[in-house]
Image (cartoon, rainbow, N blue to C red; front, side):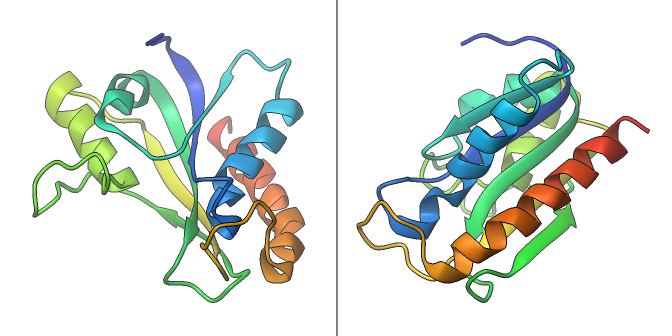
Length: 156
């Protein structure tokens, strides 16, 4: 795995074959195109977050995590700050969340980004299917605007 310092790491997860679960990946695609010529910003996306991402997080100044939320109303866009938080149940590659990845970066590399935030869109469906539900599709532009504002704030 390539680990390079970045001013801003955008780290998305989701499965594009499971309806709204793929929104993180779609936001990452949008971000990669939006900031393709900005060397300060690195975009990575995966089906799930795994512990091997910790070194990338440790060398970033700021990180923006992108994911769907099954706890939020379908289409609800939320942005929240994160702090490192170890998992009470131990390390699991199927349940590694953003806060746990921050904790791994802290534990193994002695460093976390100065700013870490999580942007989510509430999922309406996560069953098999490649399309997004209407609520999540409608929320996409709002999430992109919020992502732009957040990335801009990282460099102020």
